[in-house]
Each structure stands twice: as structure tokens, then as C-alpha cells.
Image (cartoon, rainbow over all chains, first blue to last red; front, side, top):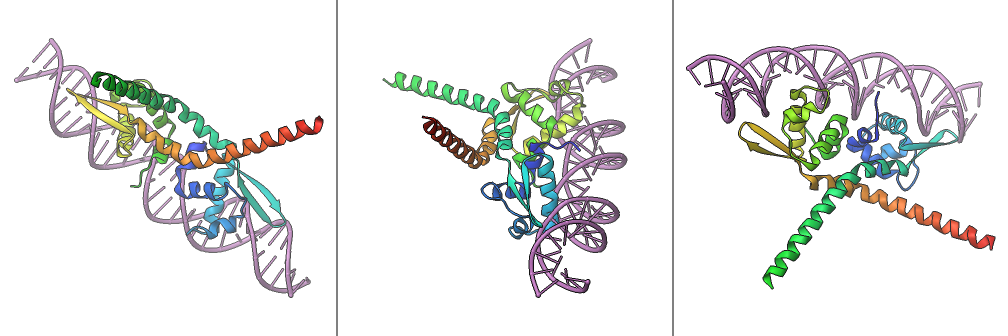
Length: 106
Length: 106
DNA sequence: TATTTGTGAAACTAATCGGTTGCAAATATA
DNA sequence: TATATTTGCAACCGATTAGTTTCACAAATA
């Protein structure tokens, strides 16, 4: 089972869970109440997110609070970096072109 | 068939293709030569990427050149934005804490 | 014209996915 | 102690996935 953050984030429900627990830790039941799925389905998603280390657990009595390991999100950001360079270059080229046109108008 | 950019990017081969054609347009055969898969498998990935509008085609004779629609990558960046805010806040809090400790030492 | 080359698409397969159902373990409450 | 609550996990199901094989079509080339 080869899981990485990109696969984790591919599922829309999983993305919604990530957003939901980004600011505050929540129990599986509480998370499930926010969606149109069963507690078990959410539990499965949480297991996948845990395997990817995107999520951390904290046990309090019989409840388990899940929260986001925000630093893991940076891995996606890191991969995007190479494209950011390209679109910044493109922007600069456009900028250059625009100023050339401006000069020609003068 | 519900395809979005997150699903498109979930597959490692697809990510590699995206990186490969980011800087220069390539034919399916040329792309396939860079991987350990058949031309047909690459062709299937290209179809998915085309459906997601991550990739654009340009026909030249019997060859079809595929290149990256770089702006689509910004959609991922846009989704990451909300987490970037959180980790910047965290960084600021850490910064604050560090300067507090510094003051206490004085 | 006959052959080679570049490509998309259909049919098929094994593996995986997301979800449901049901159960067991642990904790809380009566 | 008996019961209710919270949870993880295994078994199963239908749908989807990535890949292969095969075929058909169009363009280049001999």
C-alpha cells in the first residue's frame, strides 16, 4: 500500500476533513456529523490520513481527537515550487512585453 | 467520471509527465521513452490530463505535441493558501515566543 | 502503391478504492 | 454489575483505476 500526500488529498471528503480539523482537533463522530457519511467511512479516511502522517491523534478517555499535521501540507507546496518558478517567469516575460509595447507607443 | 486536478496529480506517473512537459511540448512516444511504461499507458494518462485541462495538444502532421497548461497548477496553490495562512501564523507565534524568551534572559 | 510510423480507442484484467455492515474492545454512566 | 457510548477493525461489495493487448486510422516514406 503506497500512500503519499497526493493520494491522500485526491479524495474530496478527505480534503474536507483536512480543512475541518486544520484549526481544531475533533473526534471521528464529530467529524462524521459534518458530512453525509457514516462514522466508519470517516474512520477509514482518518486511517489513511494517519498512514500518510497528515493527521495526529490524541486520546482523551474513550475519545480520540484528530488534528492536522500542518507541516505535511508543505510537501505539496514544495512540489508546486517548480511550477511557481515557471509561472513567475511567464509573468515577467509578459511584463517585459507590456513595457516594450508601452515604449513603442511613446 | 468526476475528474479534478487533485485526482489528476494523485498518480506518480502523471506527476512525472506533468514535470516533463512543463518546459517543452512532447509527443506521447517521446514521453513514454522517459518512463518504464508503454506508449498506450502514457496516452491514457494524457487523456485524463486533457479532460482536466491540465494539458493542451498541438497537432503537427501525424505527431501530437502535448504541453502543460501551467495556470491550472495554480488551482492547487489556491487550495493550499488556507494552510499557508495557518503555518505563517504558527511561525509568527514561535517568533513571538522566541523573542519573549530572549527578553526574559536579559 | 506498399510499408512504416504515430496515434487514439476499445476490450480486457488484476488491483485498489470508498463505502456499508457487523463485531469486539475500552471507557463512561446508571 | 449492567448498559450505553466511542472507537478501530475485518469482511464484503460495486465501482474505478492503471496497465496491457489489440485494432483502426491517418500521415510520412520507400
